[in-house]
Image (cartoon, rainbow over all chains, first blue to last red; front, side, top):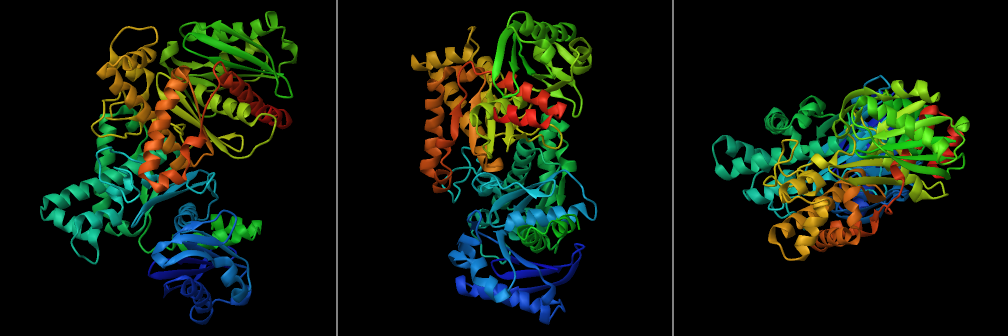
Length: 316
Length: 316
């Protein structure tokens, strides 16, 4: 049995996965703010799997944690997790003594990439490659090849959000102009839209449908940014498929129709782009999919180096 | 002993590499035009290594060929090698009977990436990753991780030349606007410059130095395109280093100064880009380096699956 947690800005998803890769328990708890509360959230979530979801905690061999922030390579330390009020926290060292099992920590998008790959491959040990493109407040991707995460040299693999695709584009919070994230990041869109709304990107889509010119421009820019990220991932890493996930994908078909139109326009302009068949290679992660928590469970199993179980989880 | 050939548009480089990875013979022959002449060029080049460079052809275990075109996955067939007058040619099947050893065929940029990696790692078995960015008539890259070429799902890994970085940029021959290649490809620059010159990109640089406004714009665009390709490779694949090669790099420091200024400008604008230390991660392939032919020899050895020799060649 492996446990995986996806520590989000407001809520934490927890799953328990058996040795065959089947999710046998699943729940959600609110995430605390700041280093101490984040650590406590992790411990509480695991205990709740036992108390509320009926998971046999004595059978748990590892806990994997996905968290939005940079993970110092080779450690369980997360830094710059600004949405959690965490500047630097050795999360593995803090929670492992209380949990009594090995703990691995991974960036949440990278974990979700592993989880999306496992969900996509179903029970079959499919080789091949996938990029998971997370459309949330920011834009980032994780690349998985033959079941293994492409980590890169310094931990920036998949940071396609900060590739500039327009020298005259909006100023990005990173300091550059025209970054993919400045067009398609939920945070950037909300900031430029300026209206208060519980779901600002949805508000932009609604206003665009109602004919608002500024909203239509923002909406078109978002689709252009997402399409650009897909092209970058296929032209650079040549992944078989690009799976879209993250909060903005709650827009579902409204988003996908726009993105498909963008991809179709470049395919019409360019025989080379047409030959890539990009539209056939893009998929939406099913709503409510536990990709990130499942991926965290895989990270925990891989860190524990119990190879058979890792295989079962990756391909489960 | 392994032989590697780099079949270029006008000349073919040939090397013979011993089991320790040392280049023991090297020469250059003119490349013929069309399928028959290209096949003959390969056979002639190998025979010349014996006759003129003193290579013991009886000791040759494999021949690897790098060629500008698409290679059908899992075959020795090259298609769309337009610069060689070849629409489709099963090169391995044509030359292997005459050479009497296994023949492997690879795209020339991918072969050069393997060769650049071997040259860069010297005698030491360095892990890590590298992108080889070829600046020639077109722009393409090959990515090598831990000595292994990243082939991708459908053979387009490293095709960064056709990522658009400016929706108002020049029309690319691929049909899109503002592709990296439309700014930085030697062919695109020569076409927009329009003046007849033996070395059109050098002519642009000379005219820019002399104050010509159009030449200065073309030169600035070239540096912007190269810098964009470097950013894409590091932000997507997070390679340790990017090695620049290809005909346009004959401009040496004149090119590198412009590219460094572009990378420096984005580092000044963006703390995130600054943290990537891109300038320290870019290198120029030494002029006259036999990277592509050496890489082709590695491809031949890998295809032959003689693992010890492959290791020696990769790290030789």
